[in-house]
Each structure stands twice: as C-alpha cells, then as structure tokens.
Length: 358
Image (tube, rainbow, N blue to C red; front, side):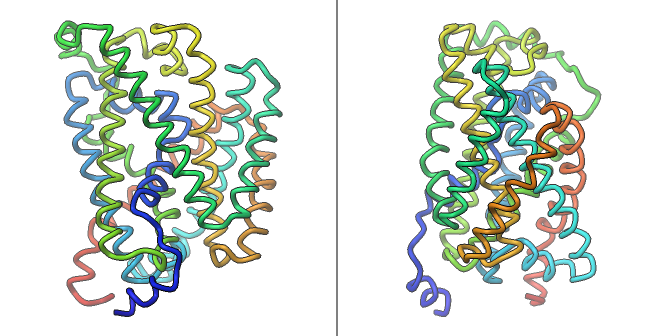
C-alpha cells in the first residue's frame, strides 16, 4: 500500500522508458562499434549461440533483481543497496571503486566522442568532446526525466539501426555456408562461458549505478517486467550482431570498428550514418555514467544533483585527452573484475531476502 501511495504522487515512468534506460547503459561505444561482440562472442566460433543465451539470462535475472531490490529498499543510488547487502564496511570499498570506475567510464565516452569525430567524421576531436560535454550537461539539468527521455528517444533508434544493418548483411550471405567454417574457429584461450560472465560483469557496475536510482519511482511489477525485457533485448541485439559478424569471419576481427566494416560491405555511403550511430551510443552511456555519479552524491533531480553532474562532466575532460583504445584497455578490465563481486552479491541476494534480513 505504501508503494502504491508513494507512486501515486510521482510522475509515472513507463516500462519502455525503464527498459530503454537499462539497455542504453549497456549499448555504448564498444557495443555499437561491434568491437565488444567480436571480442566476447564471435571469437568463440561455434559456441557463440550458447554464450548469447547465457548472457541474455544473466542480464534478465540481474536486471530484474536489481530493480526489484531497489523498489523494496526504496533506493536512490547504488550505495543504498550495497550497504544493506554486504554491510557498510565492505560497501565503502565497493563505493570507492564504483566512483572511480564511473568517472573513468565518463572519460572514456568523452574520448570516444572525440575519436568518432576525428576518425570517422573527419573533424577535430575537440568538437566531439565539447559537443558531448554540452549535451550531457543539458540532459543532467533535466534530472532523472532528462535521462529517461534521452534514452527513450535514442535507444530505439540505435537498436533498430544496428538490427537493420545486420539483417541486410545476413541477407546478402548464405548463413548455412559459413556455419561449417566456424565450427572449429576460436581465437582466444578464454572459455566461452567465462567470457560471457565477464561481459556481463563489467557492464553491471554501470547498470547497478543507473537502475538503483529508480527505487522510489517504479512498482515491483514494473521492476520485474523491465528487468527481464531489458535483458532479453540486450541478448537479442548481441545475437543479431554476432550472427552478422560471423558472415565476415575471420576478416572482421582485423577491424577496430567492425560495424563500419559491415556497413561498407553493404554500401560505402553508410559510413557516416554509422558514425553517428556510434556517437549516439556513446552519448547514452555518458549520460548513464553521469547520472550514476550525480545520484550517488546528491538527491536525483535536486539542484545539487544538477550542479554535481555538470562539475563531474568537466572533471572528466583531462583524462579524456588520452587515446580512446588506451583508456578502454586500461579501465575496462578493472570494470570486469570489480563487477564479478557485484554479480555474486546480486545472485545471492534472494537468499538474504528469504532469511528476512531486508
């Protein structure tokens, strides 16, 4: 009853907006460029489908659990949830790591925006950095609803564009022809199952920071439906990109931006639209990082939240001057191993609930 009364005084958030917010925090530059899919899925050859299924299930379960716990505990940021699940002492360690990683993630997105402008749009990288800073600050000024709306607009466009591109490519090739060739393909020593877990784990740091801000804004039913739908949406999109990547295997693994390579196979004029698509993916992830940080430091939507969001964005600029690939190679591995602990905690959280501790 308390949940219903609280929600009645808030502007209703649709399930589609929650799903878009979830997916938008995961589909960043790495996903939209195709690089993540190549490194985590395609290189495993015949095991790609099993890995996609595992990733879909993990994203669905973890998304639903995170949102449901957030509603149950009425959280406003990830620390509210972490402190209850693992205690304040351990929570301080995770909090410090999360703050550093979210800040690092924002810097990576700013650097990625500069890289898109310089490498794919033939413009100064500073234009890309400054444009992203300006839009990110404007979205932050809109508070939580600004974050929800930017994802509601851009995430469907990103998914539809990526899926259409992949289906066009798949349609141009005989899928049954290349399936035999990849049955023994494997470019890495890492097991496909471990690769899938790592892929989910490094994304969960940001997902946790974003979804826990909705604890007082949504209902339990919305939490479960949105979590599962978001996870399945991520799995489906990853699967389609992976299948398209297989049509060009093994040549595609030599390219830094596989999506642009796929677009060039279909039509070279698609280079610029795909460049814009990758930039949109960078924008939604930058917004997610900023929102997660600002919500941790201030009440979402408050004047302090908006101020912190702007300050955080500008503080991320110096680190963004480093090369995009260098930042990714340095910071993302940390995301992965720190995220493993987050996954374990969330997987075990139902046991804590059943014990009646929360």
